[in-house]
Length: 88
Image (tube, rainbow, N blue to C red):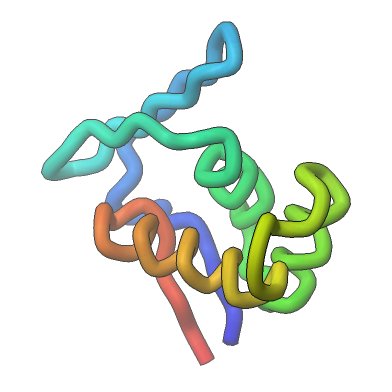
């Protein structure tokens, strides 16, 4: 599975002082550190496995479970908010 930022839904975004806010067509979303990293790493389509490795390199292994499972959970939340999309 690949993940990519929703260019059609994201109007603008701002990162400042460790905070990232995304202005989507229907909402404003404040991203966590992990969410902001997913957003930054998905300007172009990226395999979720590669994304998980990148997040693990940046943040270290998750407290429980696998990096892939934690990444999938983060992506699911961002899909729900219309910030990223999945593709096969």
